[in-house]
Image (tube, rainbow, N blue to C red; front, side, top):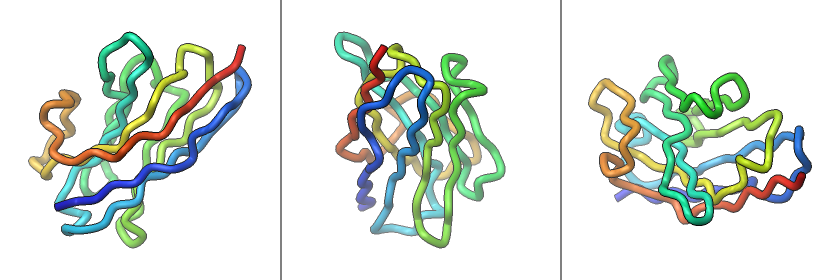
Length: 125
């Protein structure tokens, strides 16, 4: 089992920044590719970003490319999401997720085996 706990959400003004963090415990952290997803009210869960087991490869949704940065610390067993230039369209519940390392970063939520409880991000206009 892998336990994931997100933190860092909150209320921010348009153009502001937030940094989300996800702490992992349980099985070996480096066995997993990590991802961030979000779900806005009335919308499906959306892949935002993913990072390979060693942090050397990343993948981003077009909607956040150039604004968000995913990173991981395999000593602290954490994965962070730095979010810059936020807009009201970024308002959502953000989830950290893990899938077993298969050498690729998956964007399909169904491929992820473990999920955190989510943290709310609200961007005011």
